[in-house]
Image (cartoon, rainbow, N blue to C red; front, side, top):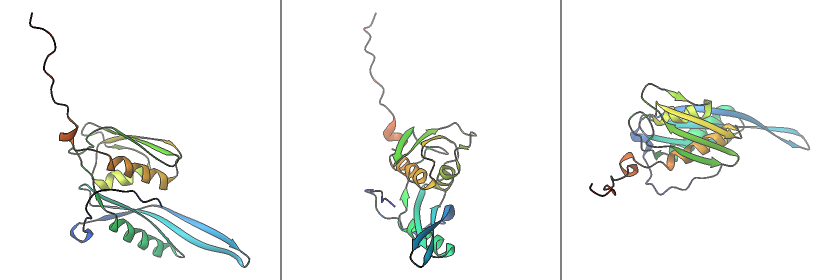
Length: 172
């Protein structure tokens, strides 16, 4: 899993009421001379539905162990996402490997219009009104990574507003 660099301070997971969601569980087989060696990977998203989110990819020989490891990794990688009420402050496009995602703010009452992978991330971050589009690869791991990249790039709504310009027309 590619780590996403961020210049934010670490968030203590013990202070938050985190909700966990398993996005994908995959069985991976390594073929050896003695036969197949099976392992499992679990993509897990954790969030408090108030702007904190973390993702983790756990790998183990049993599914419960993989999920537990994924949760532990996600709790260590928590970040804060700026929200604008029930939506995101502005439109954002992000890419991870072959997956590209577009996130757009929506009016209250719209709901989350997204696929399963993006929906899990957006619900756990606390956004309830967002319209999304996923292009390219639909691999859930890449879509979750791309969604997180898009959310990290969001600016607060006060930073995003333009200052009104003085009128350039002459007084007639």
